[in-house]
Figure 1: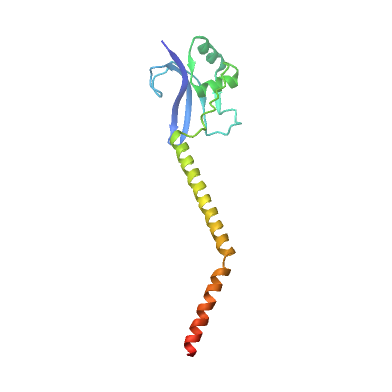
Figure 2: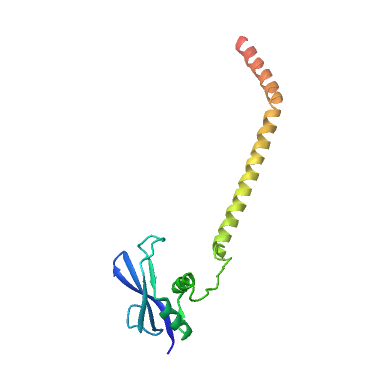
Length: 152
């Protein structure tokens, strides 16, 4: 029979309380179990000694008998010195998915195009500011011609 050391949930809504149990791996989470070897109360602060209560001798017995602890229980057993837990590392966990990468790339290209358009507008404004003298020269004769017609 494949056994596991896992948490069985108790407590009321939004007030969890877990029993650390040894159960058949096919049994339901809160169902039938073989032996209760401790408790875990996540509501208590982390430094509290009653947060995790574990019968170390029975836990060691079940680990030697081949019971497989879940990830959370493996942390408790490692802290108690019963079973060494391998440290896990997933460097790709925080990496965004392909769609998010595509959206970021699209945003970057749109921003680059907007920056190029802004630079082109600045260059056009600078050219227009540099060449207002010829436009003013053309307007002056037209005003003189209008003044001469008004007199005559």
